[in-house]
Length: 595
Image 1 (cartoon, rainbow, N blue to C red):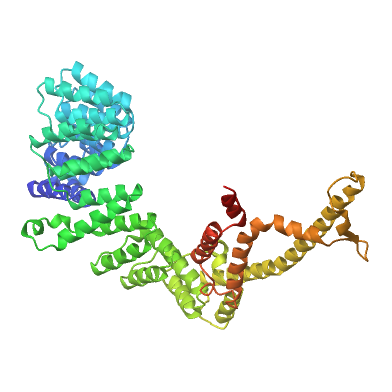
Image 2 (spheres, rainbow, N blue to C red):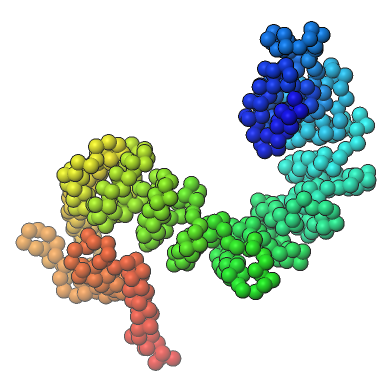
């Protein structure tokens, strides 16, 4: 029995509750090793840590049940293995309620303890308060704390930690400060975790300078974790509260107490990236990578400053937010050479965004790397690669990707393919879609989904684009004829109104003559005056005309690579504007002469 009980304890410390239950079941089937109170304590603590509340309730029932007849026959008749749960077992139930957030189980435990004549301890009240905190029942946290004081049970430091956390989540900062002062006045030796919770509470409300006072108190206590963890939590609390400048201030003040570890660096990279501070993020990242590669002895000892996968992911996210795609590519290459991989479940959208910004080979490399590692790539990586191969008319690569999706059991139905092709229709040419359909129809490789759904969606998208292209010339002709009719009607109306005007007006009606078809035709100096009045539009019209002429000069405009970019068009317009501004104007010179 002693050996089996020790084994239960070892399995509990190793966080192996399933194996512990199996050993406990073996003990209940043998009278020689039947569980005693020590074994029940061990299995109860193990299940309580794991949050297995239902299994723990069954253990309590086993304590009050008689063994089976087969087991009873192995021992003498007066053998009575029945036991009653004690405070430790009920505290384990409360511990399980913390993880499962079963706040009603707290009242069940106190009721059973009252019926059993058991007195709750400080740990019992502390666990009850923690259950209510996890369940967001803040009013019960305060009530259990007051009940503990009425019972005369001295509160421990861990109890004050729960109370401060409850005040923090309710936004009651002053009450949290008063709770810590009450703890100090009672002579309770504060734990570092209490001051840490208060420091984070203060940082979350922008009071980082008051939080630094709590850090000084933490330095005087025995720390279970390095002080760097406290500063990292304070920075995160300030960031969650929206106090960005305070995050930077805490990070700068941290250097007076300890050296930032890689966790703190990663948090600051997140802060800089989310707040459009790419320059600061870049400087911090480069400083970190340089320190890791430095040959200086005092820096070499700090192995925690070596960049990890989270460091690279954070700077990649900051680069993408700032549209710094060249730097994004450099960091990605450096990450790959450092044998770190991007977490595709969280950051696959970064690669897709980079691909659409002109870096398609990055998402292609990521897809191939994931497949080489034997993992299943995210569906976004597949779809972005497929859209890229369609745009480049790389039909062989498209077919290979479809077969890879089928082999990896990546599911995607026809409707999802249709939505994808519709969203990316601006990237495809009709000829490319036709050629791809022809290539896939001649291949026998695609026989199942998602390939079949892709082919059907591709055919539907091609038909839609063909119909749209056929409607556009008709719409252009119709709109052009409507504009001509409106111009003729407006000319007739404006000229017809001259018949009712006074003959002494200055309008030169001599320039108006009737054509052979009865239409009104403008001749003479009247049209020249209109051209002069529209002279101020000449610059914009000429700029647009030049850009259109440059686009037409490329021949086949269906190729995206040959068309001028938006930046080239913008520069052309800006140059035209500059020339128009600094061009000498006749009116301005005459004005200068007059002066």
